[in-house]
Length: 482
Image 1: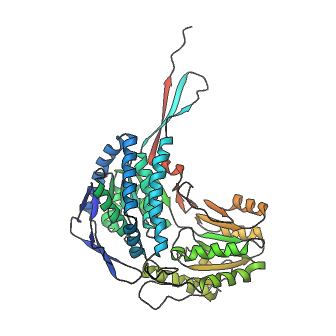
Image 2: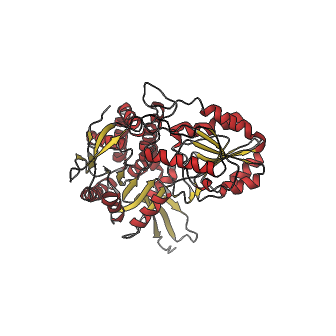
Image 3: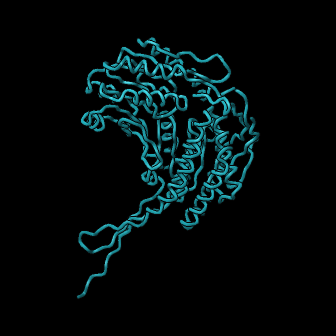
């Protein structure tokens, strides 16, 4: 499969990079080139900024119903190109065919959800205590948005930013990851095909020096939003704050604990615990890193995870229908294997997996390591791969302390049939999301972290607040002469 050459989408046009630079997209499933994209220069980044500024003036003044018509038109066209987009994701990220569905569905669901939700952002009256004034709060579009995306869910991540931006009346510059820009570039082709208003959506990829830093340092963007690592977020905040005060909405890395009490439904916990590591090859920000298992059920849980992992078939392609695909790139394989080696050096016992596959592609099998040292340094690093570090415990206060001893605060999981225990962990876990006896993610549910796991939220009605200006209007009432 070869998708050919793909162009930047700037100011409503598909254009080559100004310096004719290109970048090859390599499939992580077979290490073969599958596309070539235009690689933006600093000049292209500046043109995108100016175009987005003009696009914002038009889009923010457009009647809400007209904006929604355009959003729905884009959504319908995306649905019509579903298979093309899914195929591009399969080749650029190496996902299983089934795994690509979530990306496209999340994008179209986001467009629909925010087109509906924005109707609720109407004037909100505030009662005046003295009866001398009328007050209301109104909402207006914030301005130009710059979105930096992670590679793991190319269109899901894009949808989480594009949906609220368009509905709020903002224009947006989308900078996809260099590891998965193909589907975003195809979205640019879709926008061009339907004649989406110029400058409202801009899509380009390039290096940090020529694209990332200029987009951040410009005074034009009013919101810098990102899905990626904590380190990247810190750099973006530093770069963007040099010239002006901006807003930030950033979903950063996590270090999710997965706590299973002795009275839990063990089969369910094993199914979900294994599924979160097999799904997307463990490249999920909310995937568990640290599996804290009560010592009474430790052996059964370890055996259950190994039994889930050993039969997993790794591969690539729609026809072969593998259980799990590759990691995104060689650097990811190297990082995951380094973590495995360090875990073993820190007292871990390898139960299955633990070695990259000797075949073309970036494959690493699902791996279980039983840890004996509850304070091992490796617990402070996000794995972002199919490795489960399992740690025994016997006291709920103790495991809570271990679970919270991390700079990451995105997702957490607890399994128990004791309502008091569930309430205890729900109150005391220091994470933006606490999942009890199951897992649920959807566009209408707020998704965000605390501590070094981010600022603001993706998904839900609350995400719109980052893209809107809240303005309070007060009017003095006439003094009665009666």
